[in-house]
Every structure is written in structure tokens, then in C-alpha cells.
Length: 257
Picture: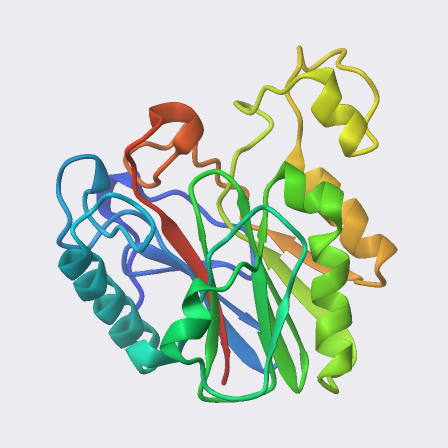
């Protein structure tokens, strides 16, 4: 990674330990580095402008590949080292014991964990929470919307780190996602997450607060939230709730440093 700079007029102060890295958000965790991308800095056009990283969108595949190469260069990793999957809003977290193969990227999963230094687990989001985890010896990236949270994807991510031999405390960063300012849901969603029926927030829910409680229940004591909402930041982020389809995807990725 190179010099830091905030994204022009859209710069806003980030809470520690997050910082702007070019047009994107970076954070250092236990023995690792992580990056949460914005929609800036790519070659896609239209509703996918500009840094669309989603392989399962209707964007031109060559442009998505170019965008991924740019992301890999920014992170200082090989493009083939970016480990993602076909996300299905579930709780499966793949334990990567070798470099990802092309066919692995089409498996159904909502997270990857690895102890390998040459692999960067990555998830794609457009309102769901990108959550990265790090401990001594392993890292993980998780895709956590309300269905994934209800299914237990965060607990599975912590378990995956331990199964890979990670020791010490687990440190977690929650990247940009739907915020309580904008994310309105029905009481059936609140019930699935163990939340009481809506009251003062007029049907809105704080997914990041739910995630924090679940992580703490799984034994995590260090949880950092960047505090950025994808829905109310169209200049910075793709949002399925705001824009519908078609639309792009930003990424959350982590690698051992």
C-alpha cells in the first residue's frame, strides 16, 4: 500500500483504527491488513460505475476482471489470491488450506478463512455487512446480511479461525453496510434476529449492533465499526436497497501481513 489520502470533498472522519487509503477504507488488525472498497476507481459504467467487483452482476466480465486486478494491485496481492464465492446469505465459511482454484469461486459460501499468507479472503456487498476477522495465525472475511446473521455466520467465522489454529484474541472490523438511519425491516426480520418489535426507530434496525452482540457472544472482545452507511452514501457505495438491480458490489478483504 502507498500514501494515504481522503476522497476529496467527500472526506469524512473515520473512527480509529480505520483510515482512508486513497478512495477506500483500510484497517490494520492482529497481524493483518484489511480493505473496504468504495465504488470509486474502476472502469465499469452505468449503474456499475466504477469499481464494481461483483462477478454475478450483469456488468461486463472483462471490466469486472480489470476492477479486480486494480483492487489486487492496491492491496499488494495477486489477483488470483482473492478468495470469494457465490454468496447465498447462509452461514457456510470455507477453510482455505491451499490457494483458491477457479472452480472454488463458484461454490456456495458466505465466508472464507485461511492461515495462508498468500491468500486474501474477500466478500462482496451492497448493503450487507462485510466483516473481517483476525487472530494470531489466521484471518477470515464474512458476508453478513440479516439472513446470514440469523443463520450464525459470525459464530462460524470465529470457529473457523480457531479450527485453523489461530491463537489469542480475535479482532474484528465491520465495514460499510446498511445503517440504522436507513435500513427499515418488518417485525419478522427483527424476530429472526432476536430483536423486539419495532418501536422508537420506526421499523429500522441496527445490523451492526446485532453483529456486535453476536460476536461478543462468540467470545470476541475487540469489535471496530467504521460507521458508514451504504444506503445514504450514493457517491461512495453501491446499495441494492437504494438502487435495486442492476447494480454493483464493493468488497471487504483481509490478508495476513
